[in-house]
Length: 610
Ligand code: PTT
Ligand code: SF4
Image (cartoon, rainbow, N blue to C red; front, side):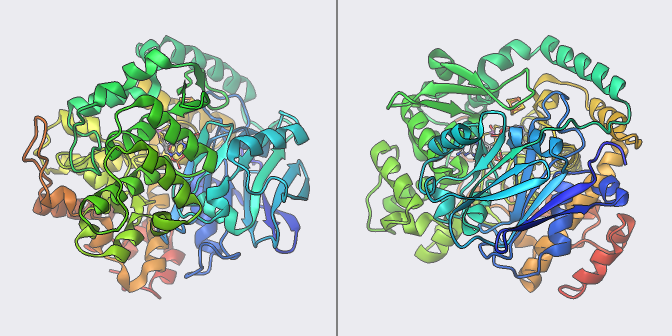
């Protein structure tokens, strides 16, 4: 086959063995790559009920046909496993040279199984895999770890690594790469830690040569780089990147503030994109990108800290902190430890609210930077109050009880990213139905929600959520490329099936890609249901009670809250369009239509199918 390498590298850390396995053309065509490969492997191979932090969990590193060649913004990769935070499917999309080196080494994906009995890292060079001693780097922060790995193996490698948070099995530890990149919000770093795997270093020395139409791909690549640079929004984007959205969020009352109680923050202008631009020191980003968006500023100790909107939303207004340098300091700390900034911000805010309400003994006030910093350390080392928060807000609320589950801001156990949805029903539905828990990546519909009538609970909104999920969660996560050229610069979506067709020689239209996306979505859904069995239901797709029961008290939309009946209506429409039943379980006919008859047969062992 063309385009795909057709090979998967399997590594068994328990036995320190590895093997190469071929994948079929049908699998490649039906799942394309990235998230598609990850869920197919996890569904086929993971025994239901597997403890995510046991050696039996599998860590999947998956690329797509666009990786390893110079196509713009394709320096990305999917990292996936059963999530220790949610108990369901978990993944993340990380910018890294690993994606490129993995394909150059000859693999579409790597599956890491088992666990080492002592700290280890893996060095892969083409066909060769070495299991190396990591005792000297175990315990180090991510910056120091990466530096030492590069000193040892040179700079021409891809790295994926964890910090102390992953080592200590903090359930929202992430995987890090290239200093600024972080991926796998639902605890992919903890899965590495449970395998005593500090890092993966990979060098691919070959070229990805089996491209169906190499000249065409080359020509299109040059054209797209130019088109990106000429885009109308290019200059504005280059000034602030994702931080552009901060001021918009404040204006539209969706900036997460005081644990998502409010959508406006009194000190918003001290931590927005303009504030960042005034002190910015550098621009960084993923490989193969000419619209880089990682803006760094100096934190309190003079170190660089890379600010994206989510980081500032969750470690700024959401914990009541209106000082950019202090936000940057917490952000750098999170990167150093290898812990997700979104979940961290949510857990700190949860502690602040619990303290305010007298539900915990510790005193930690809104905006208290020193205590937030110390709490971050305590979370990573599971000390004091940190031990309560190391498994996420869902578990913390189950432990402290009272009404805290109403304001433990998560869906399916994954903390909500930085958009308040008191008055944004489509975005609430996007969080509710995201396939990994409350992440914005699959359907960032908030600007559309605001533009088209925030009081409306109508079918059009549901259709938009599904359209975005198909594009963002399906197309971009399987090919695998950054979606920001399309979202931020208005680059036409048609580029991507055209690239895919020219690379693989298999004809893909946008509609074909949406069928792949629907297949991936229903299979991810089946995975969750198999894990949750009888405990599955609509509640799994419902955001926390705060947004329904506690209206905003500040800003232009004071008094607004989500309408529970309206939300139920949206959810029912969502299930109907997806071909799932009233509990969100795929119908047999839907699975069959997507070529998943075997999945229907397996799922029937766990729930009744319609
Ligand atoms: C992503 C999530 C995001 S989404 C942000 S900021 W964003 C946070 N970044 C963190 C960080 O930094 N350090 C840290 N310790 N934790 C962090 N947690 C948060 O993680 C990221 C960019 C961004 S920046 C976005 S929107 C886009 N996301 C894409 C995606 O999901 N898919 C895709 N095909 N393209 C995307 N392009 C953009 O990539 P997760 P990255 Mg990330 C420091 O991984 O798990 O999905 O969580 O990968 O390489 O850092 O790029 O305003
Ligand atoms: Fe990476 Fe940003 Fe470029 Fe996307 S736009 S590839 S996230 S640097």
